[in-house]
Image 1 (cartoon, rainbow, N blue to C red):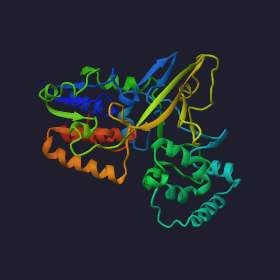
Image 2: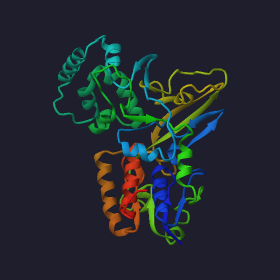
Image 3: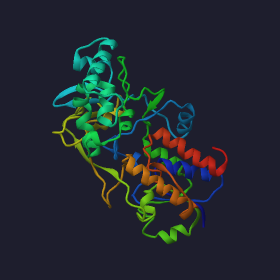
Length: 371
């Protein structure tokens, strides 16, 4: 009945479905949630677009990616400048000269570099073997203890010594007075929300929400020549090789009518162990100048994934990556008509701009060009 069945109506699935339709293919998109847009879904609450599954700021240095996504929306001027709250004290993120000044009182880059080098030598680190050692090598033990250790261990549910060093590489460190977290040439939040982007991509395409692929698996597999699958690759194969590990998230959203400004910033990370949530998001600050009464905040809690929960991102340590690669090899012979894509299908953490690149690469591989 269809050329392609797309499982998952998030950014990756929607881009592939859009490109398939542009090339004259008949496409069906299904999603187990009761809405489209996956984890970038936002909804209007009291005139404020609320990021239901955590904050999303689009950022890229790739002009082609920026041009592509701007076909579906326009972005505002929001620049991500998160801050950290450690036991009631506020610190600047990313790690910059502002942070070094707040913690050590230094004002010049060379002074900060000297302290970091001294603390690295005191820790006896030559080649970092885990996240803790990598963090100390990058920013010193003081900043690691105050701004990284508690937050990271809450986020991943594991001691930093048990986490691979590369995880910390995503955190920017710079020796300038620059609070732009991403330092990307292009960044912002869509003026009419992320859900609208996906709606425009899926316009004219048959979409079924509240539809779980695994509930009627045999029927869905018979409906299309090719399946574009953005769910868990291990679940697709009934965990036959073993179960991959994921992190899950829980969100507590609160509508505050007695204040128009709760925390003064879009994102505040809580970096001590005593506070159970990792960060608090105040959504109206993603839209500078938004003038509506009240405000909406979301506290984000990280947890270990269990069957039945929502997996948000993979745990890319050695053990899991090895198993994920085994699944990918297994898929080549056991599911040759299935394209596994996205964070869960490829078991790899993608930012939104990288997701755009990967989705269009899949489209190029299937259709020969991008429209």
